Image 1 (cartoon, rainbow, N blue to C red):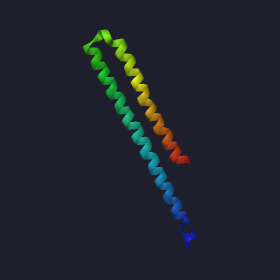
Image 2 (image 1 turned 30 degrees about the vertical axis):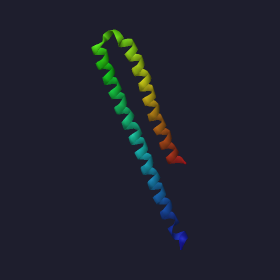
Image 3 (image 1 turned 180 degrees about the horizontal axis):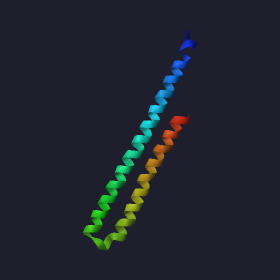
Image 4 (image 1 turned 90 degrees about the vertical axis):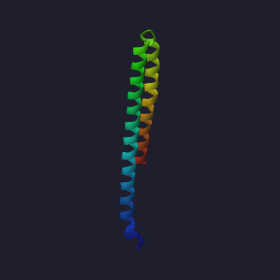
Length: 85
């Protein structure tokens, strides 16, 4: 009797795994993109207020954007682990 339900359980597990993968990549792509936009907007506002500090602001902005992008890559790795493991 338990063997009859085995394909249904495997199918449900695959569906949950697929939904978790989609959720991880959706949130992991959306939030870093929003953050990079916010960092860029604030950097441009700061450069507009103080043009002499443009090189320092740009350097800090690029480093922050790189760290934010790393979070998106971590989300991709987590999504791939959920999907294939």
